[in-house]
Image (cartoon, rainbow, N blue to C red):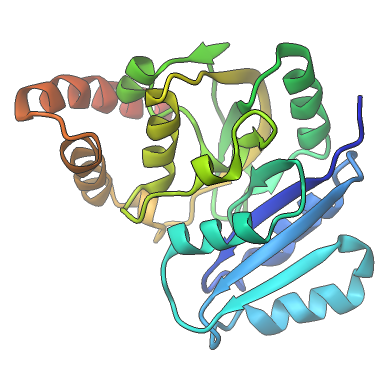
Length: 253
């Protein structure tokens, strides 16, 4: 396989309790050609000293630290990371998630084999300490726009883009809550296809106070995506929302 650079983008906001384990999982990757772009969302963020200390102790980590003066949200931070990226491939990992050591190697091999420009993988729910709970979310071989509207199975920390197939300007996240899901839908709506590697390569840490653990907020965000981002009528939104609700519950039981 051709050894192309992978640019890993991580938005950082008050992640001092988890960032070291996330960084360690990137450093441990068996695929060696990578850079890790950490975009800190605010110049006073308490995570900054932890990152600088990590960079001093691990110069081999190939970390690029970008600090935004003011807090602008995860979408802005991820977009800034993509702008800064020098690699052919763009991968995401959130500041509290953990990758398996062969995550990138397996996905890049899969993308080369399938010709995928947009790849995602299976993942496992983890607890506060990123210890796997045994609940693994399986993914389909491919997913279309209509299928994705019914099932938000694409998890951000599993996604890899090939910018030779999907240009950078097409992977800017909309400035809206649940911006990652909005981006997947936008790309798929344009006629592109996402390819799923059904192998557990990521642990999704779920702190008790995380945004995604707030069920009511999650419902509001997804509903707003249907109505505002996709411009769907109320009846059509209800149709897709019912499918989303069932699959969201199923993934967690």
